[in-house]
Length: 102
Image (cartoon, rainbow, N blue to C red; front, side, top):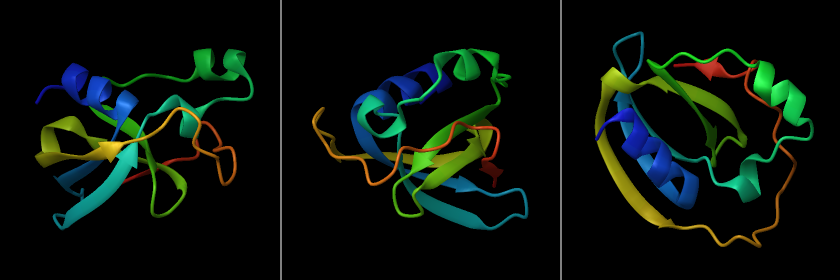
């Protein structure tokens, strides 16, 4: 699955992404980019964020925080469910920039 396909799937679903971290260990992360969980308070802030096509920032459901992974390090991608548009947010996530690259 390429980056565009991952982003499309993450925009609509809860995904389980397995990847190799920078330290060589394997990580399995349940994550999404669904708008109900990743809305930004300030769209101007979002527009200023740098983009790196090799790294994909996502909302980690289990840690309730932004995380990222290198697209090339992904070893498995599974769709583990739809997220309804009216899902309630525990807390509005902070925009990437404070995410942890793994």
